[in-house]
Length: 546
Image (cartoon, rainbow, N blue to C red; front, side, top):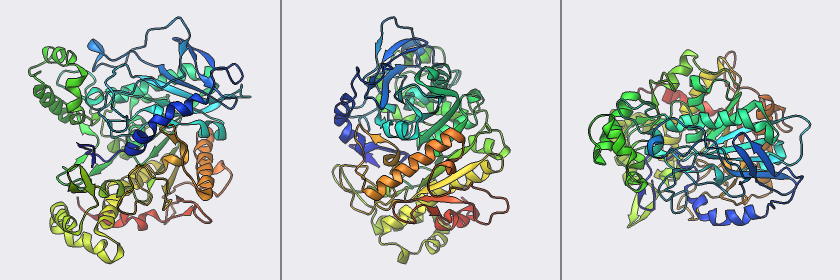
């Protein structure tokens, strides 16, 4: 998939088009919050110094609060260090810098490595008791995005919760590895742990309960949640986890998201990550061994690193952060015992399939029948006939929708469902499928095929994106309110079913022929049980040898 002239190899995109188009509105939206309004709680003293946010009498927003020192010069590719304290009241009324990335979700991209900051959104006033805390980790394939793109005012006020969104190092800055380099392939995950530690020490000053923290994220953020679920260093830093369109075993077969894509898993062995990093360093003129090679790499300007940003963006396992592959850790029970809310969208892969083929210079179009035939043969080989029989052409309006169903089921639904089965043996699990057939668009350019509930489309129900509220009809507004109720009920109690509205039973495997998956769609009967295994052909894929 492309944004501009760049290939997006993971299709873990989140907000590529919509945020870029709408960020210009963010300042206007934020400006509506007065720094002098509210109950006087717009100045909060953190452990490193005081910050002044904005308040409107209903909600307080604090942006760009440093939780770690700038990872620059000798701190580049090292574990996060505490920030320097400040004496004067720090302005926290505007977003902090996004971590270095190419243009895409962030208009113009970012070249600022002083980016390890977070944002706090809290209801105004002093609560009768500390509020539950939701720490949001943004998606973007581990190479783009920013926490400030997610406006959490609706979630904070309706759910009476404190919401924290974080930045973390991306791409080569966050997941570079090299032989002898401590922390290879894990700096972005270490940043997330540093932010969670900051929450433990500081969130009570914003009215939050450090003993009731939910780690939540979508796409790469959801994958991060699963990584932290299995990381010894995250023990005690959160008490529940929400994983949206992201699991411990996300991977893809050949050609899934674009022609020529190589099959891979998102988590890679340490040796593989270090070998890739050695090649990246050599490409940049920093060949050799430590310490000389790292001195060379740390001396490179950001401009030299951005062209190779996406060469190193796979978290590594086989280290102190992830001792084993996270999916294996789930299988053997080596994960933190916390309640889990997990799920995916019904039509995840329409996002990549809608722009699969070239349509001219700088233009893309949906997959054609000719391309479908070619990639089916290339991807499945001798098993092509079995896959075609499972997904007959008569069941789909186009080759693009047929391919999208195959990739959605094999890449997204299977990994999410199997993760839920592993977790449900030991902890409470609540599983969902977002199924709005016509959610608000994620791109300002109308797609040339039906998108359905594409990857990231559930985010509009939970957040204002890029400073803009969602364009929801009456049914979608009710769905959004119900989803926020479910999410914040889960954050408060570990059970989304305690929210008012349709019941949400646990996902159970023992003694249940069809584990409960909650379909989330607008309209009467839109919230209901769904047999996700049948709808997404999971029995076929489970028995399929790939």
